[in-house]
Image (cartoon, rainbow, N blue to C red; front, side, top):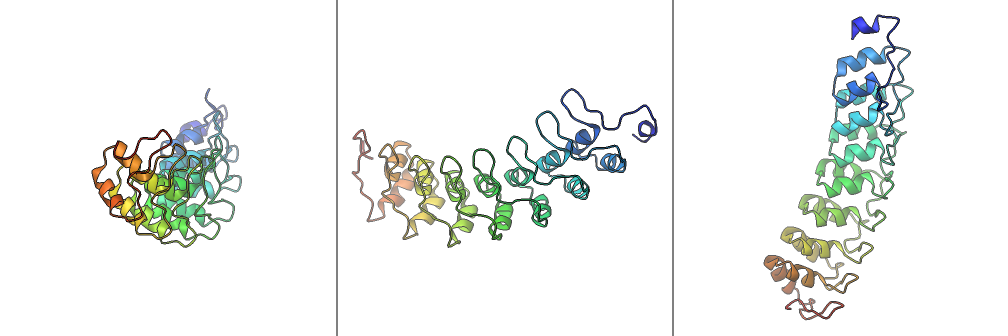
Length: 261
């Protein structure tokens, strides 16, 4: 690298056919010393995107290279909120659970921790979906993050955590007064409905312990949580649901089959 950069006939900012510069490649593969060499040059564009709109900072966030992120964020021409296909670095770091990298972004005023992607899914929603408890804690501590914000399908962070069996994240979200534990998605499927459908006994127990969760809520097809868990054979969840006196064990769906059927 040093030998090549010392030559006048070497373009240190020249991209390949994918639009990826030497800095982009070094950032993607975690070569921190190479990044230092390149950033020391005035002719290197530290925020240049590839053909897919991914910047060197974006890929460093994606792979959780903390040292690389620090180097790039120190550059005046780097935009820490620049998205790729609607997905900003904050979103990427949260989705993949890179807690230390998220902390670096939270320390800045020019990165939005609640900025959604094109599908409306926020960093908190994806951290919750993927069970990254550390990142969820960081985002829940922020006043500028909407803890109940749904994506375009109506799925909230709690909905995602309940659906994918992330009991620890569900506990964190349920401890908040500003989180609606019974908020349905666009198909009228609540967090309880999703947890029941997928047989998540621990999550179902947490949700049923709440007075503000309706155990008889049905989705757009008329299927209740009991109907959903019965059709998928989740015996343990069915026992918990039936232990609730408010559950109607004979409530049919829109096509008339009952949980027993």
